[in-house]
Image (cartoon, rainbow, N blue to C red):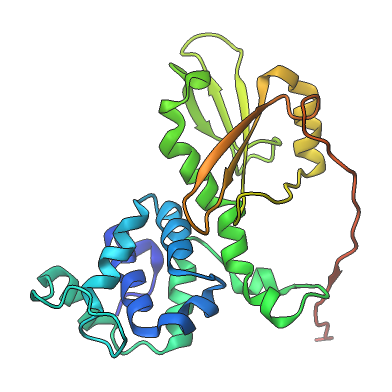
Length: 254
């Protein structure tokens, strides 16, 4: 069985997510930190660079096989390529399957658990969903709609999320040194708090009218976006906050 996510084709990842949701239902949702099926379709779908409906369709594909209250696509045989994936992974238990789904988007449970907070267990278990919503899912959503936005028409896009420059995307004309910066954030609901790191805030302050804050809202139902030019000087009001995190490690002498 192949468990290295780098060797699993993207369509197979979508199929596996559908199998997981069909097999484990509401328990699977809770384990991933999602509240509804619509939310997991949107968040994981965008994070994997696909349409949210793709995951729903694959869940429906497998619903007639697993014991649940849904009928799914019970009037036809399961497609052969879907059956091959099911046969390969059907023996995975819940915890192994959860780990596999999380690995699709580079989520490392060990990294997340090194930071100890006062959050209760339920909040900590939602870390995967929260990270996807505020990060990768929102970024992939932006990439999917960017060509329709007049502000960025004709500009080449560069993903800068790993460069630590204070924004997620740099958009530039084919010739010239000028560029626009876009920082992407995501919200579970249609309203909520958006946090800028010190580096992001400094970049927005420095770039001014060349800095956009792109916020994807309502991942739990029907995602949409709002765009804020020069957010530091605009209608948004930012409040400086500070918090202390306790990092836990274990030390031994050898």
